[in-house]
Image (tube, helix red, strand yellow):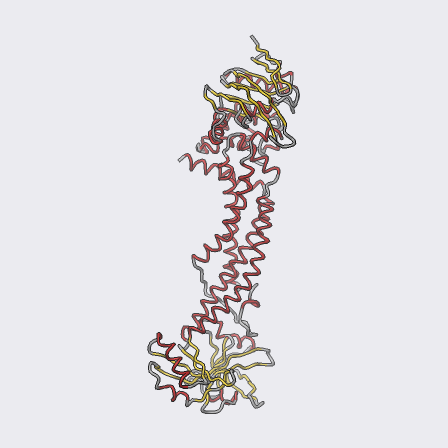
Amino acid sequence: MSRIEAQRNILDFTLSSLLRRKRKNAALILVYTLVVFLIASVMFFTHSIRKEASLVLKDAPEMVVQKLVAGRQDLIPLDYIEKIKGIKGIGSIKGRLWGYYFDPFFGANYTLMSPDDDRLPSGTIAIGEGIAKDRKVHAGDMVALNAYNGETMLFKVQEIFSAESALVSADLVLMSGDDLRDLFGIPKGNVTDLTLKVRNPRELGTIAQKIVQTLPDTRPITRDEILRTYDSIFNWRGGVIIVILFVAVISFFIFAWDRASGLGAEEKREIGILKAIGWETSDVILMKFWEGMVISFSSFLLGMLLAYAHVYFTSSLLFEPVLKGWSVIYPDFKLIPFIDAYQISTLFFLTVLPYTVSTIVPSWRAATIDPDLVMRT
Amino acid sequence: MIELLEVRKVFNMSKPNEFTALPSVSLKIAAHRVTVLKGPSGSGKTTLLSIMGCMARPTSGRIILHDREITSMPERFLTEIRRKTFGFIFQQFNLIKGITALENIMVPAYPTGEKRSQLRERAMSLLEVFSIEQKASARIEWLSGGEVQRVAIARALMNDPEVIVADEPTAHLDTKLSREFMETMLKLKGDGRTIVIASHDPIVYESNFVDKVVEMRDGAVVGTKESS
């Protein structure tokens, strides 16, 4: 019990000590919070964006088959379906029509796709929220797109949709297969690629091998491969930022070491007084530990809260142009909050622990001096 | 009560600036008495006082407290002895700036693990003893010289020590405050405490209640005068 009381007394004294050095500690907390805020923002952002990506690809086909000409993707003839339909393990095969469209007027890139069903009659389109916002169009408005031959095609906006993830839906335009062929000049009998469903996902590799054997000019891509690509892209993006943050963290440590650990003459004198009047070295270290903990833990919490608000309430205002898609239209992004204990503990060990240690070490050195020095000052 | 046997203290040992503060001092401090270490500055009074009060270890020699040798005790035990047995009054008073008079008095007792309410009560009663209870919540830098002195004495008494050790306590005080200080020491002697003061102020060593004056010069005891 008395040990707990001693801890309480020392903690009380620590808090009043912190208040005595308001300016120094406020500066420390400010810089510290900023670093935690930056790191936590990147962490929240990259984790959530990867989560989004997996969400987006959840309904993606298990395998996509593309035709290659001179190593580049080309249109694939529909009769290829017949050639591989017989491969054991394939559930269903469908041709898919899609492409990219550059809108020179708005300077934006759209993804055009033809849905599986016939919900869009010819002459109508469904567009993503990003495009609608960018072009200021509403359902029922007309949208003009330039066809491959220079002709202008008019489409009526039937629907503006929002998907679970804004990442894909923002720049998406859906139109009927015939319209898409007319717009891009895709001949009948050809599609962009084929999508496959397999009966047993474990056989994906074998099936892919058999497809290449049957059709040597094709390239099968599995969903897992796409997921891995997304993962590495977002990781890479996170990575770039983390390298920048690493520099921030290093400069923070130099700052922290200078401000917190380099004890001032007044603080050294105080440690001397405390030892002279009966504090043990361990009591002094305990006090410095609490001091470090109070500063680092409050900055940690504050930085985390600010980062959470930044990423999930302001849609990562500061990072948006750096981290989000290549498309010119930035999705009005509302990431799904995704935080796990692993993330938080990593950040905790990266920030709170080193700081606390960096304050204790010099205090320990100061606390082990003979208390009689205080009698000579 | 305290016995020093052939105590030697060398600073910066084996360095070019090596300095012998005490070549060899043997001394007995009687319990419940007032002993004054008298001598010019640099005579080794403060060094002797800090060795006696377990603040520094001698380079050689022995210290005996209550018939127990404490010279080679680990730091933890020395700290405990320092906390329980000695109350220190420093030359500059060495109070902690930025906190109140009350907190300053409580600080020595924080690591003992006593309840804060009890500590507060005891510190308040000490402030009352010295008639400065109205200054309890005043920051130390707002107090007058006399009030600071009384807070320093109150802090020395916080852990109810047997021995009061004071190093040049009147060096920065005027005559009136110096006499006030000695009156307080007289009261403490009356309470049965042992008092050791290092000073070269006649107000201190000529006080009629001082039992023993130990004269020092160049780190050695050159004379002892005991009052009858």
